[in-house]
Length: 487
Image (cartoon, rainbow, N blue to C red; front, side, top):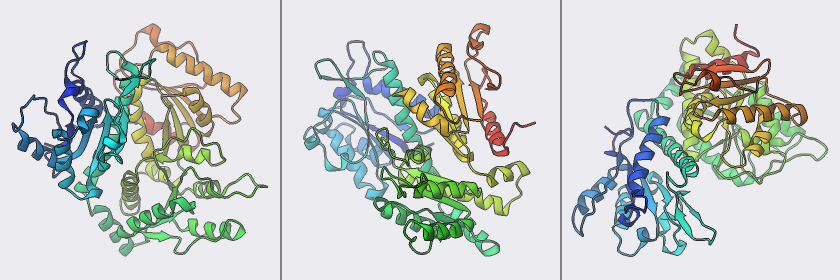
């Protein structure tokens, strides 16, 4: 049974047979990708219902199984193209699979992901293949010659890229699944809430000029869900009039939405607070539920004063963000119409904490599982794979909690980062998280491995070596919301 209702397959893997021939180590690259990707995706989905991946590794002759394969492509939710020069060669069957998928649905419903086994000349690619999400699974040697990454020869890099693409796929699958399982549930619930009591209102923050179209699309989406959207007119220019208008608008909002890009917001040179940061700080100070968005682009080179906001924002496609909005609206409807435990009501009433998760590549699946829950209670960021120290140094001072995951990671990794954190606290950080902890996860560890060499009074322990305890991440947020430790 597929994960997405209405489709036979959730993912269709399209590839040229040349890329699946056994390499010198005997590995069939695409077959191994299919196996590893299935495992990675299943690690991200806490459900017995797992996505159905269609992968055909028959070496068929011309005309054999053609119609059947094309039909499988048409009946798939996501098209994963394993690209290389043979894939785009004129007359190649892979292009027929691609056309069959595209012709089976409107352009805005075509979810295509490009995975590059080897680089392809841009002029050789069909135009529709140039825009989708791209992942490079190759590297270059000392002579500049590209070669495919493998789970044997390039284990760490391959695993990192594999889990990145798996996480992206799971986000798209969940987005489609929610849309098909409850396409009108939120709209009807919001409409019922508005008709029987206080209206549900969302405030969209002022945006930079490059995001006006995005803002209008989000506004239109909210209005289709019967949400009252503020402001009803354009904001005044940045200054005293803007401050007064924004304060008036945000006071009446249930949900605050801020759309961000690499373009900085306005700031008076004599003041430290920018327009963007003023809006965010005002909303959080009033305890408003906040959702921050930016495109999933590289921001490592952004150095202006709005960089901390970009770090807090969720990097995802706009469609994924719409799904996040829909989920949050559902939670707000629940808070207005259902009986909620006092603790839950208290959590929803306060500002959203932001936590930083330090994780080794071996523990990324644990990190993403914790982040999924954290994003419903506040926000979380997982340490970047590249330039870890820079990422850690720039983001930890803005976090209310820093968590070091200790599962499959080598003990030395945890000890080193705990020691580095202590040095940064003493020498560089002007502000530090108010909660610091090690989050234990499987596998079980011996007595020596469990005892960390770097520790200090106040360093907390969460989780378990026997299984991943997700309730502990909720306990962390409960403490942050209440301003202290649970008793």
